[in-house]
Image (cartoon, rainbow, N blue to C red; front, side, top):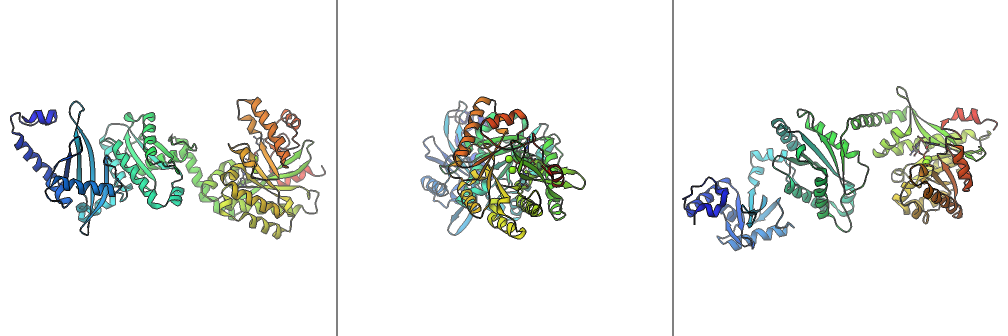
Length: 554
Ligand code: C2E
Ligand code: MG
Ligand code: MG
């Protein structure tokens, strides 16, 4: 048999007449010099070849079956599937630990017919233990064996410098991964990260640079011309499918930054891709967002808000505007206290700008506690005045439920200001309630037993609104008119609204409709049996002094 008929066109450089034995000897020698252990299996997965390195790595006698038994035993003890493309694990034998990196390839001939399988094993212990080992440790992630932040940035910078192509930088986040670690433990979390790393290796091409830059964040730098969003999502779904279990499904968010200036600092590129990633609000298995300059502006604004927030609280830059809650004839029975930031340079800032930012940064409880105190003080100031009967509603953010002892906070306030709990109403949003119905149901009962009135805010904005009502016994349901505005099917929405109002009344709750802007809306809601309203049609939120002036003697 001549060499070409055995090696096919891959043996392009071999002499047509060369003896097979001679070539085998040469290949053996070449493989040896590369320092890799090599194990070859035939199509039935029987071990047909191993080089000397492989034997010595697994301390086997010169017997292929024994060697392959040791190798595959180690592989399965590590929970690795035989067809895993690339992985890195410690191998312990006779008290000595070594770090092996294994690659697996399916070998096919020129016609794609399976010839067998190959494992190459690289002993990384030498690199890790000697001088260059320091370098390796500094640039690689111990858990997955991929590049770490330093390694990724250096490799990406040099690849971008040497390439003419336009590259994309992809930054991934596993949604609620912290929660996963809490629920299932760090080991399970690590397994997932290792699996993702391995699957990443299977899908990337040689020109791609990738790594895990921290926690659950993987990055990938790849040419734009090869990126196809649909295929990419398919691959990500495949990956998540493999690590999804009955009790948990992975949701991956990916931010993409298109690299327009290859000389830009890679860290800045990562920040931008991360910004895109953070902008994702949807909850699919794989969601993708592309970076835009607007995100940068928002991020800067967010940063500014966060860095000046503490100073603003200490320097009393936050205040309340109040918006009347009225009966159909315009008579005010309560007001809602709405936070406003009276910024010394930027003027009046609406809550739409800062509430979300503070919620994301877990700082909202500081603002809320401050606003509740302003409202309680206002109730106290109105004692003995004509506004005495007007209660003030305050907002409770979903996050407050985790950071504050709400019942204690409000009890302390009514004691400190010596006010009636019925004059300080508590608005909890529907999303807060649905995020933990049991906890909220208990809290609401406790607040009610202490004399407070509890309102469910923004009712109808979530998906499980009705379901929640069987467990929650609030005093007031606040329905937003947005409920009607958002839908294309007005008629159906009206029917639902009508029944919701009836049902709330049946359940012993009052209904306030928010966002009433026109007389038509008022008539239509009154026709449905709604008697309490809040909206621009009656009045906008305003400073307390203005309210007092406007509503004096009314
Ligand atoms: P919310 O609690 O549902 O408050 C009602 C919001 O609807 C207010 O916006 C109010 O100005 C607006 N609104 C009232 N009537 C109408 C109307 O007829 N048409 C329209 N288009 N809008 C109307 P604002 O003051 O901008 O507050 C927005 C949201 O910010 C509030 O919604 C609340 O969720 C949050 N928020 C405000 N202050 C605080 C606070 O102190 N703490 C917390 N956690 N959240 C707050
Ligand atoms: Mg509210
Ligand atoms: Mg509301």
